[in-house]
Image (cartoon, rainbow, N blue to C red; front, side, top):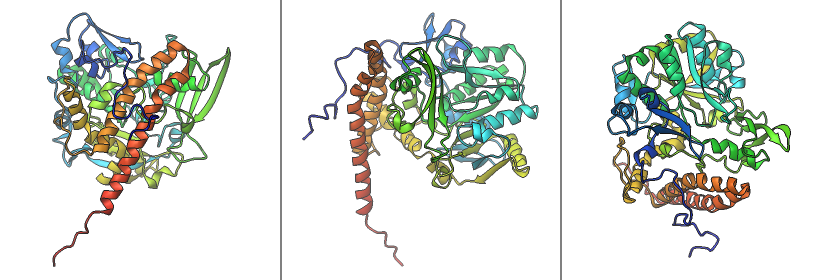
Length: 478
């Protein structure tokens, strides 16, 4: 019997008009990564921010053939494996794993040199590798995310750093939507050698752009990939701040990950700077104090994040993530896991290890997979999410797995259903909360989903434990 306090169990929210990820009209566009790259190949396409705080493409006409070739969700474009095989498959000594992709080496560790680790999100490798490429003359510009300089309410944007001091301004993680069109147009206009940092979907579309435009292949000489659970909308940062008194429009800056000297590396703080009652304030909050901060819930997740299976940024020359491993997480200063696919970058890293500038330990495949266990499991359940859309009569992009509901348990299906609904409805209910000028409305409307998720997650854990305990021992015949 379903308790009356759990009205959302086994059904969807109803009674509100909405169009987040609408399956009518621009069905295929709703899956788009919205990296801005389609606006680079077609001058009739512009970028804008929609009502839910996500970038969108504005078309003067239907999607052009050039756009479809750089759209990773279009059936016409090569998939992640095909692109990676072209870039890395023939390299001497390269290895391949179906989830990790191609690689020369796997590491975990941190930067010792300077204060990169202190000011970085984890081990400091993201900023350090860009600075090292600049110092050694390998690049003329680093394309990465920095604080926005405009006054239009956008907090972060892609920019081009042309010195180590400018690169240092891009330290830290930004859980915030950005787009590449303006910086890539600059790359096209200004000759030079560039490195670019991006989430898996952005790096994939950079590779697609390089496939059809040799100029970008010549100028973007290094791709630095991030391991990223999912993309957030602008409303994510706004919601976190509003909960603690900084109203929508009054948030000036947010540092999503401030290292906590008193905790583990995954117990970081978030720092907010903005106006409260006309006064400038700055304060930190723990993750447990931020209602919408749990990545398991997927609040404010963009739709494309649920329809990609590229966990380890398979088309990046070097990939950086958090070392969420028992042997590393106790060090609150943070460590990275690293996948190296470019032999030149591997040589550079080995030289820096010999000089004592970085401290790294080799990892095996299974350990690296464990460091991102939740993302790997989410990847394996893509087939079910595709099947769920099919059953609703919706178009889905062609992926590397076929839609299927097999090989996934009942409770894992319910967890996936709930998380999809949480992502979708968080946009809607937050918009209504802003209209009502009532943050607590958002919390109230999302709370049944949170409870439902927790129930199914716990039942899944118990069922897995039961199945493990009831397995018959393996008796080898001698």
